[in-house]
Image (cartoon, rainbow, N blue to C red; front, side, top):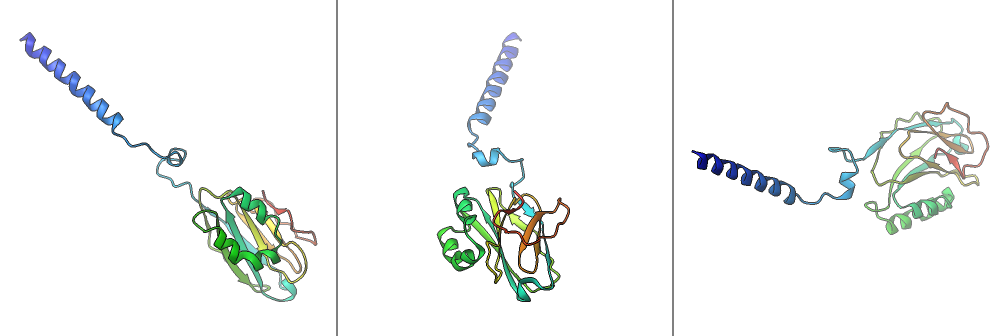
Length: 185
């Protein structure tokens, strides 16, 4: 009788050891990106964008607005040196040089003065490091603002200028200040 119990105990111990080794040595390695996010979540988010357009914006002419989301920090620094005029002249080449899958994604709109705008939430990939809004005004100026792509934004297109604020901030008039560094960071 003792041999049977000893045999069973040995068998259970060996089976448990085998199962333990099988479970912990057969698991493939999980990429670091997956391990740093919440299980079941992609890490992607949505950006709320609200827009207010003055009835006399851009001398009563339509305004092209691009929201550029950037994954590469060096590219983000380059974009922050460009005026809106430069961006709209060079954007096709910049996009060709930096494919959407790797470095940047652009949302494009064109609105008329006084238009009521409802913008769908903009998808933001986990890798996005920052964003820039460009507004193509006729008058001289940088017409560029940096944004934090994880915080909702209010874009206000005034007569000769624009500003970008986070949705949490109380709305303020844009005034006649330069946009070279305006926006939320």
